Image 1 (spheres, rainbow, N blue to C red):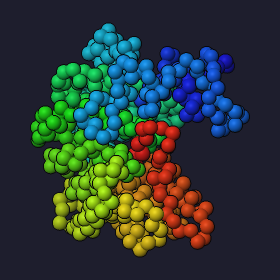
Image 2 (tube, rainbow, N blue to C red):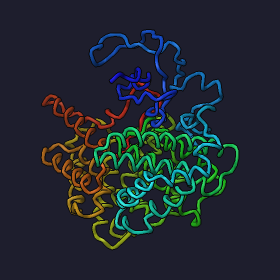
Image 3 (cartoon, one colour):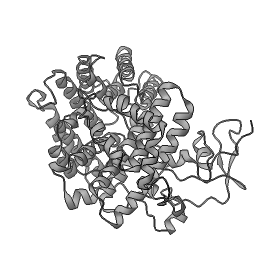
Length: 507
């Protein structure tokens, strides 16, 4: 069967399969990347690193726009689409990856109109995918009440998706990706899911553009937050990596009116729910690099005060620990950017470490009286202590007593949560943090076994935690016997070739 032409230049550079859609590759659009187009004339630039052309220069399109330092084409900059940085993102414009060109903007006579929602909802495929989201995906997004009707992923998102086309597309894309993977339907997760995801991103782009010119309705504001969260769940199900960190950064930039002008209160529980989850994901991505932190501590405090117990049901981490580690990552970001001296930074880390060591899990409120919530709280408590120890001294040998004590506390706590308990699905991050410092083969085996328990229960495999741990363990095994310098997992989450790093979503 003849090929449909060459892959786009972006997919070529990333060595991945291209869907060869015209005028732009759908896979690039779904990842929030600028598609480099399809080559007609070539000039030679760069060195191939794999395949039969290894060592040769790679041909790229001679007409491709020149890149500015942040990776955005100069032609885009001339149109006034400035890149939003992680620093002070709330006061800046939305990320240009969300902003479509004029040709890509949905028109009133397309499916993105209100009538288009009814048309999409009438399709048999839509019914199947919404049913899969409702029955299989929703229950695993939070513990204990996953099957209940007041599960917010069911209660908030499904009704909103029937009114907001972008959210409907995002839900269909996530469902198609998950259903396609568990059934082995390659077309569904490589074509159908990507098409819906692309449409969701385009609709999100238009909503973000509108939010800069006028005040959106509550449904429209909440739909933006929900779309971003669903896109992140799609990333987690597919690869565990969110390309270039645009989703969480974009969420912060478009929520500035909600957060600054309107504030957060009890009557906006839907918005508070989405923001709480995004604020936790912001901390998770900052674990790989503090400079990636986007939400401010003020926002985290507002979310912690306004959230109900569903915050812990979704994220696992107790909100008090969430606030402590959020403050830690904010100080780490300030130090990384040169805004704090070493002495100021060290004092802030030591104070936070003392707070976490003295934090009493027994005297706190939890979503239920199940005693295993105490184990979950302890696992997150010591995972965050581990992060502080590594922020203070990234090269300290993993065999150090305080580090190994944290590992033991995490593994002992998680051992009390059986594989048939819904709380086990909350423990990926603590297990990962313990695994990154585990030296004994039996500890490493235990961590991987718990990952398998979670995968079997949730039917979702986030490949990032396992892949990073195996790289860390292999690098440690390759060290000489007298070299006990730490090998940090963050070494494998930074790509110096790109200006905006990818988000590693270890949940």
